[in-house]
Length: 209
Image 1 (cartoon, rainbow, N blue to C red):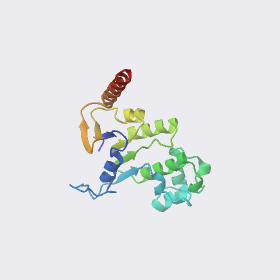
Image 2: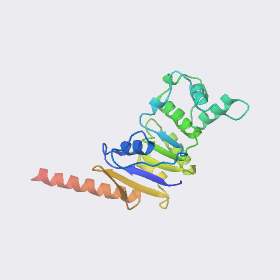
Image 3: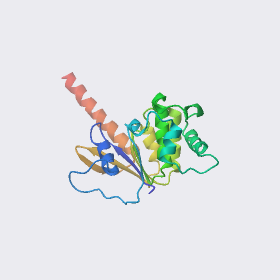
Image 4: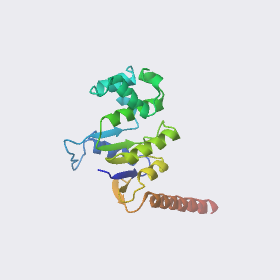
């Protein structure tokens, strides 16, 4: 709890597969994955739309999943939560199918928050989000007391999430393995830039020949 893990590596290396194994969506071909039976995982994937019911409104969808809401009105309680994630009032009663990608993402993020997870698994959470919402997501993750496992191409978000070096870990996925990167995310970026520069210099010298 409280650990921040950034999973990095080239496209197609298996970062999403690793998240699927952690979440239990995939069964390992070798070894085992052990989780506490009481563990609540909040999962945001690149295919988040698959979680939604397109013909329900966001309020109907969330009330069906979480019917026990406190307050004068259960609907108002859910609407307040949607508002915190930036979904404006007129969209609360709009069929989900008519919402934009960013608006649907806000509904999913609200749903994850309402599940009160111990650990968040975030797979490219910044897709469909504008800069203001990405900043708001980073702020929310700062306040989150549970664990966070993040896959993202947004280096700014990773830098924010892994700002506390004592609580942060970098896992490098490549060549079918996962290794612990002994350094900060900024050091990983510098190493990556150095490798890319070396490859460019090598190609340039070959072209020159």
